[in-house]
Amino acid sequence: WIITDGNQASTVDYGLNRNNKSYIYGSNNDIVPTGQDPTGRTYQELDGFASVSASSVGPGIFLANSPEFDPARILDGDPNTWWVPRRIEVDGFNAWGPVDPFVEAKFTTPTMVDQLEVALFIGPYATLSPVDVTVHTDAGDATTTLLPIQVKQPLNVVPGITSSVKVSIARSSYFAIDDVIGIRELTLAGTPVTPRLVVPNQLNDQFSAPGSPDPAWVFTRNRAATSPIVSLNSESQIARKFTVPKDGNFRLLASASSAKGQPLLRWLGSTPNFSVTADSTWGENPKAGPRNLVDGDSTTHWRSGNDITEAGGSALLDLKWNEPRTVSSLVLVRGAGEAIPRDLVIYAGNDARSAAVAADGTVNFEPVTTDSLSIRLNYAPIPIGDNTSSRVMGFGSIDISSVTDLYPGPVDRSAPYVASCDVGPNVTVGSASVSYSVATTAGALIDGSPFNLTPCSNNQLALSAGATLLDTSSGTSLATIDQLLLGNSPTMGAPAESPRALTINNWGTNDRTVMVATGTEGLLVVNEAFNEGWEATLDGTKLSSLKIDGWRQAFVLPAGAGGTVHLRFAPDRIFKLGTIFGLLTLLAVFVMALWPDRKKRQLDALNEGQPAKALL
Image (tube, rainbow, N blue to C red; front, side):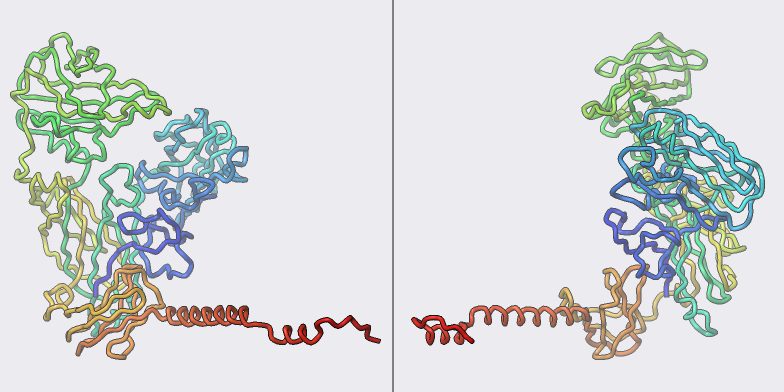
């Protein structure tokens, strides 16, 4: 048996799924239908916090409680996620609710709070105005007037031990700004908060009895999408809480992929003779990294992660080479849809000079002899309503004629990347720890392809029964652990027999038959949402149904002889009987409506031509 951390959960709202999986919910989210057992799905906890709640969850009048705006996101360490309250009216002082919108975080144990920082989320159509934010703790309340900017700012707080921290934003600030105000990050002094997924333990009793088999666990990191806009379901590292049913020894296997970020981009952009880096890259995607500017291929592009807004935009490139050269011009080779900078500021040592950019991307400036250039690209403002101007910062190449002979060319995809045990990834399970070394290639790092890690010590772990915490880290390497397999020899060994063969005879909407071969106990898994209405029999014997991965339909196939598995959606029989009865009733009404009224016609014939008589 394998226990996974698949956080799939059925949802009643459209638009709340991504990558065929639901968003990561907290244990008390009200988005999941009440008919689902919360213990049967993976949910998120924040280390050190009992709960994180809010006055309301946005985004707006017609859609509320969207998981991408869950209040727990203010503590996840990711400024690209945030909480916003729900707007309940179009205009007015109470448009954002009858009370000041707030987020409240309750600690698992009373905690000393004497410092807080907050990064606000300000709507794009805001009328910039100061924002009043109040911090409520057991020690008292303190209000701070903040600038309407989206970087961290300190908050006033009454120091003291407290059971919770509540941060409210004044309704008057919403009224003045006339747009949404939310919170990107709330930072407490001390250790960063770890978001942790709690794995279901529904089958714990099945494995806890003496002599029963041990399960295996598969933990998979939720990776960010390629687009930086959709990172709402991603995890920087694997952090899990799971239940070990009984004492046992387990082996830990790990695989990884490249860790997106500036360290990888710097490694790819650095060679012995030349290096190029940028202050940001779109989605930190190595395929759009600054190395593309000097690879000799104008069809590969660097794309900045910065934005061009109504205030303008800028990006910074750093180029270094191994010997001084005299530089007096450069050419920015743009691709289709890429904006042209308004001007450049070129830094060489302590010298700085501005230069205009011609329509063809040529930039001329006073000669300078140097072994490095820092280039600040400045872009003109683009109004919010302008839908024709390009907002894309990037180029296919940057040509500096006096140093192009030093350009490194394209990345050698076969170049090795090695990280030793002292700098490689690490996994902690309970009180045990395993370090790993990395050996892969530049191509695998660029593509994000998975590769296996080599344990640096004994990866056999003795685990005690009970709740167990698991955490991973990348060390200083360029690898992030993506998947862990924790199990023992019987579970992780090669199967003694081949999987049971299946032959589909009929696969209808509500009635299906499958031929199953002889074999050991296993599961017949149907990739459809679990529904108690489905029944399955093996040659007439009813099979037990299971919900796996939090949502899939499965049936237990007992060991032994095979046969015909008949799957039937039981409620469909009631529906069909009801439909037949309804059609028969409708037919009877139709026949009665057409049937002639003979009694009335006979009376009319008998009384024809006779005058009316009074009855006394």
